[in-house]
Image (cartoon, rainbow, N blue to C red):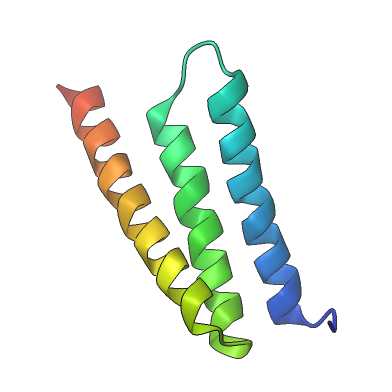
Length: 82
């Protein structure tokens, strides 16, 4: 593996998603806006990386992950305004 820009961005995305996962398991009260935002940004960074180093299975996973995060983020933001 080369450490080009796309791989560095992908690693940052993976890191954000791991932080979100750890947060969801350790937080006493989960902030769904933060959780879904971390997942969304992480997935988008990985999607960018996958446009350079394409892998169909990973791309499908990240697109679905980003969609789920978007839905969760929208729900959390609507709930916060109600």
